[in-house]
Image (cartoon, rainbow, N blue to C red):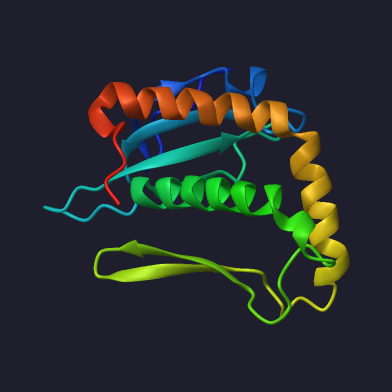
Length: 161
């Protein structure tokens, strides 16, 4: 099934058969990089879109994001994965007195990654999250290794901290 090209998001590059590699959920039919649906005259942004199909029509659950947000999400995944690999040191898998995991500096400020202690079920949910992350480690790690290789090939291979 081909993703639509007649909607507000205008695909320029696409993966038509994403459901073949989407993992256990396989809910996304395609991914495209293209011209954002929120573009105004004279201002063109690019975005990435995940296309979903209900079986009868293209779904409103399809989502479009600016590219920097996708990278921020990858940073979140990497840092969370690294944190959980050492979380066994804490009885509840996190430091109850210091829920901040890291501040990731970006554009004069920082994203603060922290354990969400506002979640009333955090003690149970963090264990469930860790178990699901471990179960999907092969899917995630394969993609992270590919991403690391592509970043290196594109000239982003040196640590610039």
